[in-house]
Image (cartoon, rainbow, N blue to C red):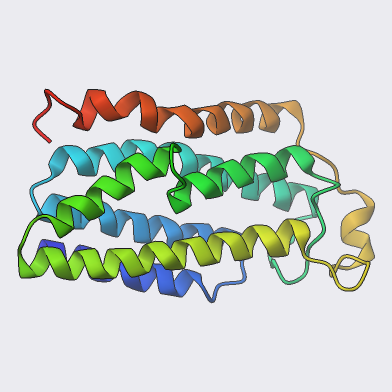
Length: 212
């Protein structure tokens, strides 16, 4: 039952994230979806794998939320991704870091999410149970949705323009600025961790010699 609930949670939260326009809500529903992965892994008795995804997810999701805060701070508290866009030239560092966090979340090979999310889906598929295959199917669809809403969020916020001009009101861009050092330093640190924490932790937590 836990496996089924986790699979449904991962799927429903991911599909809900596809239709959100609030910057933080997209990331929040993504968090709920990733919790679904952890739950169905625990339901398959893959507790170590579940904890590993919790650890990697903590890094890149903290990065994404801080990047969202950087954008909202720069844009005068505007959170609707339909009303902002073309920020890549104004917030280049935030663009790079949110790109790293999004790629890690999607499960891009050799980034943090790849090592933990991929092994959860492998465990589900290799369980040879109805519940495991059910969770694997919904988890795979949720992973596709994750890629779609992550790309949509980054594209609309940083690349999206209307003609040659940004979609948002002029007043939002007049005082827009890159993140100050107090925000930029943790962004950079978390981006580096998102690149390496999965690779470093894979053998320690789920590799040869472990009980996973």
